[in-house]
Length: 437
Image (cartoon, rainbow, N blue to C red; front, side, top):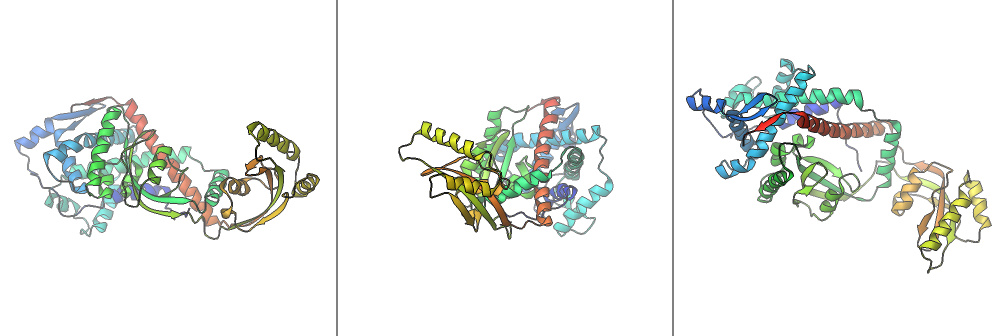
């Protein structure tokens, strides 16, 4: 699996914020900005209470207008009714994020906000410093935009603070990941995007499923999957249009992996129940993993073969495996392994030179890549017997410092995203919520 160049952790979180708000163009649903009595009534109408702070009907309607623009969904009562619940959840999460930041005395400076807004202006070819006028011209309430941006920046700083104090990537974790990527060279990989709706305390799981099904139907109708993800997904990938990059089986939830294998390119899955919520997956492409550049491993392996009869049953195999382990467990180098193999009546024992381990069968490939040198493997059942392997030498597979740094950043980002999701669940569980649907 190719490792893409990553950014520094703080830059990564900032990029997510900027990217989410960098999709504003000039066709927003317009609404009256005047301070009419209707507007005042909307402000005073309470939709939810989040730890003593209110979310008003005005907040809800402003966010709905914003979401309709981002997702390019039709602006009608039917659509608004479908998305209302998820929009409320988004507003609640923003409140919780800002409250968590306040509790930790994390503040968003005017400089940080201005920098983020300038990025949005630049990405949308808006004259610098003209964002407020641009939003007003196109009918969006500036406070809706500002508060959502502040929530994302503040939450990024909260998570970053936690990440720096709790997450450490060990050299052994990097080695393990490098070995895994090398061992999986040649296996199928899938380029996917996701929409993720989490389970939460204020909404039964069946309602989360219903919301996921509504988004699935919108995606199947041809609405842009990326904009739906940006607008509704509760995963860190939402800022990037739901893109997860290249994944393979074993890296993701078993139910997701099973669904992906049945999709064709540009196919969209039904809502899939995961451990922490529902997922909608879009498959973009399939390929075979190329591993790392210049990662062709060569190995020298000593093998001892213990033959079995074609009619051997499980009891017989278990007996042979125990015998194989007993014979080889004390062998400490390949010369001793070779001598022991010559003592046994098998023509298939001996030394083997493998030019490219990626061409080996999966169980054997994983062993010869990961096992320490001069260490006898566990007995392995093959078609005509049981074998024990010992790697005498490895060569090739040049892994540079830059590659190791990329792997470390990849692991850090993955764990940071898991931590972020866990932190959000924690503040949701401990919150006092009253929702007036």
